[in-house]
Amino acid sequence: MKEDIVNTSTSPKETRSVFVGAKVTPSQRDHIKSLAKQCGMTVSDYILSCAYNFKPKARLTKEEAALLQNLDNCRSDLVKYTSALHGMSTKQRMVMFNQIPFMVGWLGELSNVAEGVCQFLEAVKEKNRIPSNPQSEEK
Image (cartoon, rainbow, N blue to C red):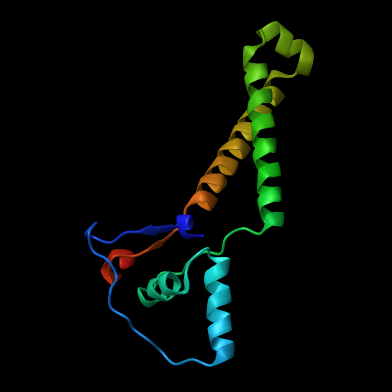
């Protein structure tokens, strides 16, 4: 799980060596541990991130990851279809669709869908991080 954490500390040699503690109930501790685990973070990293008003994102479940992979496969297919259509001659495309305006609109929509899927995939890949200071997250 540690590989999901990016330390954005200003000094590469700066290490966390000071302990800060808080008294919580056992159920609160279990809840905090659960939230940290869902985000792929240690309890210390999770609490530190929350202290800097950073809201860590939960990692994908296995089912969500499978759905995301399926979505990526669909995007790949759309890109292949678009490339194949672009590789055809105008005459071949006219025979295939027989309506050039429809085909151009269809390709435009495919391009929009593929771009949206790519943006979604990139956003999901962003790892949780520990802010270096509270001011950096407010801007």
